[in-house]
Length: 385
Image (cartoon, rainbow, N blue to C red; front, side, top):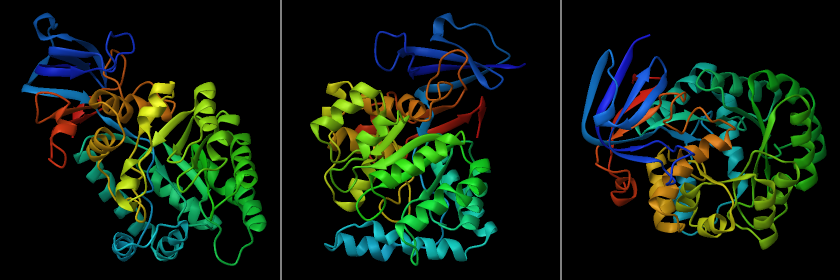
């Protein structure tokens, strides 16, 4: 197995859980890659020999971003809806149905090509692991094919049949479909089950039924909750011991306490608030309470059509009270934890060698220089891409 020494790193972020600082930073650093994994990290002066060497010229190196919440399988365009929202109209979940119609009409080849373009866009900005949901099909056939398309790009696929109730169905009828024939068709292509627990989508009991059905067939649970207002979703996620609950924009003291007690990760999606003009989640409140936090893009055609994790980092620092270190950690190791992974989001021996070389001497530039393309190189599983 060949080895590569990556050296002349001004600042290396390892996210080593045993380090003295949050990010496990090493100055004037190097790392060794063997095959697809990290074999060694430390000061460049102490680096072992390797078969080949790559000099990154005094740039910073960070773990690849782990985007634990995205909706990439869709067709159509909702830019007119965005323009209307910027002109003063409020965001509501009903706009999802517009995308559903376009997605149903698209061919498998069209959907696959669209996901490929978005994944490439993400990768060019440093995302090396991405979760992809269904949810724009809302029929047995279209949900299953959406997940089959997503599975071509990631193992982190999420069954979101319970996105909204489609036209022509009662909520009771549709939940029976989602927990029955649709689940049976989708489970072979999915790792996770999700629901949109929100006014205009699914209530607490309906969301609980969907999640329990998915968990019963071996899927792991996550949940959209508390995006549009306070509600029972966050506490439901904690009650069920879900790995993560996403959005968490409107939280009561009881919600925060439940997150602390359960250990469920709060995945914050600041691109949504940027794109909808809603209040940003209070990340500082969560972190100070001891809640584990992740950042993700929520890339989707309606409420947040960005694929940029660097933008999410910058927004988290500027708008949500996070330090630059906390935001980077949440976008890498935090995202990995939200996917129940410990092999990505870190650059420690034995971890997958997914890394980003920044066109900057320190990770702080991700927030310091928002909107600037700082990705110099991306490595996935030990190879530059």
